[in-house]
Every structure is written in structure tokens, then in C-alpha cells.
Image (tube, rainbow, N blue to C red):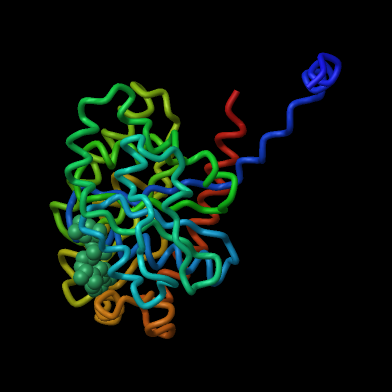
Length: 290
Ligand SMILES: Nc1ncnc2c1ncn2[C@@H]1O[C@H](COP(=O)(O)OP(=O)(O)OP(=O)(O)O)[C@@H](O)[C@H]1O
Ligand SMILES: [Mg+2]
């Protein structure tokens, strides 16, 4: 290349970076079994199916329940692509390398990774360990409208990575005292993420799950406690106890495909609308910041 060509190239304006469009949403709760995966899966499917949003669902839990819950919709066998562990440990640089399509238009997933629990231990010794996921999400942020992160049932390194990468956190809370105290622990972690890591994650909402009107006293007590402590942060959409939700998960289908008229399907469709609204509010608030 001649010197003139090189100089001309250097003088050219750098190409515009692609706009960052995705909203990254972590679905997290400290307590196990409160409906994190059911919420992440059926919310992501509703966003893709009913709102036309290009959605990536990331399974950060070594139990691999996202794949189990969507197995009937997966387009191809897992193959030999990189795992999330490969990406978090720096063997691959970009989360997109692990992304797989599904038969649901607009919905993409990462494969299950049973090695994530071991990876979590290895991450503990790495510098900047909380920001590894954030560092590999850049291209996914350009290519998707929503990235939904399904977190494991603890507040360890993988959940911290999710929170440090996310714009907002949605917290499922079932109607139990243990789940209630888990919400307050998670709120304390969100404060730490904001203060120590300087990352302005929003608490998008707390979504009451497994709401069982037959168990009226406990349900009313937990809902009253949530309303008293968190006010408007409690989602108006409640997910009822629904056998169809459990059966859909066993069949590897989203509730919208398994039984679209069930109360569970209606709840998750309404939750997707509410999450969209809440994300708008969060964005406006973030933009309004000096
Ligand atoms: N609203 C509901 N009604 C009835 N069953 C439900 C409901 N939500 C979830 N379940 C069932 O409860 C079990 C736990 O749900 P899920 O896997 O979503 O919880 P989780 O918080 O992701 O669990 P873990 O902490 O193990 O990751 C599953 O068998 C699921 O099908
Ligand atoms: Mg789960």
C-alpha cells in the first residue's frame, strides 16, 4: 500500500459503531423454585411472539432448565459450539458464538451448560470477575431488542455477572416468607452493584408468582408485605398457580404454545406488556439523569 493511500485511509472518518439497541433484563431471585426460569422463558417467548421483539434468552444456570423448558422449540441439536463457560473464561470472545436459533420466530437461546457451577468457582479468582458477561454482550446488544438473563438460585458470581451486565432486574417472588426475605437480600445486592461497581441497574419490578387464592391468608399476607415495602415496584401482573405452566415446562414448550388460553399464558403475555412499559420508564429516568 502506498504512503498516500495509507494517509488517505487514516484521514477517513471511523465507521459509526452500530447503535446499542438491546435492553438487558436479569431475572433473578435468591430463593430456588420461585419461577425464575418459567418467567424468563415465557416472558422471552411472549416478547418474540406478540411484540415482534428479537429476543435472546441466556441460561446462566448450570441446571440447564431453559433448554429443558424449550426443547420442543429448538431448531437444531446442540452440536459442538462453544459453551457459556468457554465464553466467560475467555476461550471465545463473543456471546453470539454460542447463540442458537429456535423455531419461534425472533427467539434465540444459549445452550445449557452443566459446567457453569465449576466455572463460577474459577471466576472467583479473576480480576474484574463481575464484568465478564458484560464484556461479551456488546454485539448481542446491537443485534437484539431484549436480552433476558435467567439466573441461578443464589447471589454468587454468575448472578453478579448478570446484574453487572443488565439494565434492569425483574425479581419473581412466590407466596412464601423465605421468598420475601430473599427479595430484600437481592435489593441489598443491587445497592452494592450501584455503589461499589458504579453500575446503575434498576429494580424493574417484583413479580408475584404461584399466587394461590385458595391459600388466601398466606397469599394476602405476602402481597400486603410486598406492597407495604416496595409499593409501585410490585408488578400489577400476578402469575397464578397453574398446573398448565408446570406441564408446559415438562413438555419442553412455552405456555403460549402449550395452552395459550390458560391463566398462566394470559399472565405472562400481560407481564411482557408490563415489562415493556416499565423498561420505557426506566430508560426515560436514566436519560433524564444529569
Ligand atoms: N405459576 C406456577 N404455577 C405452577 N407451577 C409453577 C409455576 N411457576 C413455576 N412452576 C413450576 O415450579 C417449578 C420451579 O419453577 P422454575 O424452574 O421456574 O423456578 P426457578 O426459580 O427457576 O427454580 P431454580 O431456582 O431451581 O432455578 C417448575 O417445576 C415449574 O414448572
Ligand atoms: Mg431456574
